Length: 174
Image (cartoon, rainbow, N blue to C red; front, side, top):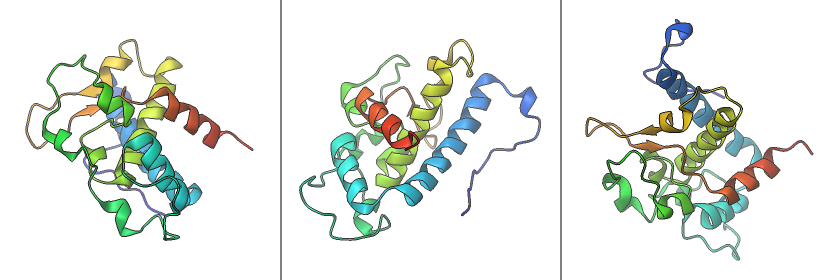
């Protein structure tokens, strides 16, 4: 019902650099990912996709034991939370472990909701980039190596073909 996008101003959009535009689009896509999750995904489905595509340790055979995507278990750190401060400084590094778990940012390690929203943002940015809407060097612009410790690292290129296929099917009109 509400979207909060801190530190982004929407005026003077035409004067923005491609990187600034991508940052704004990523923030909006992230929030749309939350909205999509709350409106279209059940707790059982969220547990299944988090286990299958995200590396969370939910059993895919057992029901989620709750009917809410707002259950506490969805707000626990990722099992690979140790990756939070270990992202390489090489802009071209695409870790197989990160991509396998669709970890597209440091923030996505916080909990299942943030993982899904960041993966959703990566998915949409990839679609926009492939359509030529993010500039020439769009893949490079989807990576942010922080200059300050308080910034999050981002690599929106880290989304697996399997998760893209799942989202394509899930977003298709029925």
